[in-house]
Amino acid sequence: MNRNRIHYSWIILLITFFSIIVAGIVRSSSGVFIDPFENEFGWDRSVISLAFAIGLFLYGISGPFMAALIEVLGVKKVMVLSMATLLIGTLLTFIMQESWQLIIIWGIIIGLGSGVFLTVLSPYVANRWFEKKRGLALGILTASTATGQLLLLPILAIIINQSSWRWAIVLITTLSAMMLVIILLFMKNSPHDIGILSYGLDTEKQDPLKEQKKNPIALAFNGLFEAVKVKEFWLLAGSFFICGLSTSGLIGTHFISYCISYGIPLVAAASLLSFMGVFDLIGTTLSGWLSDLFDNRWLLFWYYGLRGASLILLPFALADGSYALLLVFSVFYGLDWIATVPPTIGISRQIFGIEKSGIVYGWIFASHQLGAAVAAYGGGIIYKVFNSYTWAFFLAGIFCLLASLFVIVIKKQAPQERMLKTTLKA
Image (cartoon, rainbow, N blue to C red; front, side):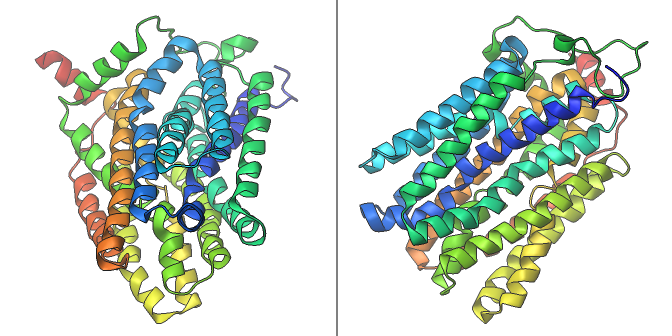
């Protein structure tokens, strides 16, 4: 392309960024719908939490299969199918009347529809479209996973307060439809589609893209069978289980309800979550940049440790009724919301190689969403038993401190060294 024109990799990054934002707001909007659904339909909170927990688990477990499906069908087709599925799910929400319908729509349809956007799409685009500034690109895309959804939550909360939850669904349905059109018109599968190389790739080097024609299910499970032989996979999966438990599962699903239980209005609670989103954009983008410069294990150690400390302090801030303390919590937690993703992907790529890391990371992210599902459902159960979320947040903080120990024992290795040893042993 002409040197004076923007490299199309940045256009792809922009499309992916907003696609993830839309998928994220659809998935995370569950936090503002718990109370309205409970009030209008009379459903038990644990049942509503179960539906959202199933969605969190399904979009996580679909990650490795989505990664394999991208290798077979191409990223554009998978994005189109997934965004269309999200659109169908939001439309069906208007006609649901029973709790089992909530489970099918928000648990299965929206859970699977959001899978590719919130799991493997960011590392796929960063790895395939960027040779240089890959860490920065990954940080930006990872930040969009939480930032967009958090920024829009106050808007949804205001709509629910002033009108009804149905008009909030209208907003996210419209955004899904708009994004579907943009993907259809402008998304590309690879740099080869438009006759260019990945951003920063030397013309004398060979572009590492390789097409796969195998069964995507077989590809996904083959990646898992190789990964489970490696100790570092279990350490990363364990720490990411705790990551999901302490973010989208607990904060994303129950933070607003936790604030409401202390008398904080819905819009104010959603605004605090939105405030986290501003700092998430800063923290996660910075984390992507730092992951290119520093030992990713130590980055993860500090991220999990600081997150654990903030979660343990949150109940005290709420009990004190201090908005100042809650703002401080929102800043520190926001900076660390998903800052763990770039270094986790970096370690995965270092151990398993660029070609296999996509599917392997998909399985690692599946454990993330398993943790999220446990927290989403478990938080509802803890509230039902104790009539409070306090123990849920205390336990999440303790688990984060444990995760910081998981990541620090991972041995620093040269790229693919571990996979080479495993292959030789086999």
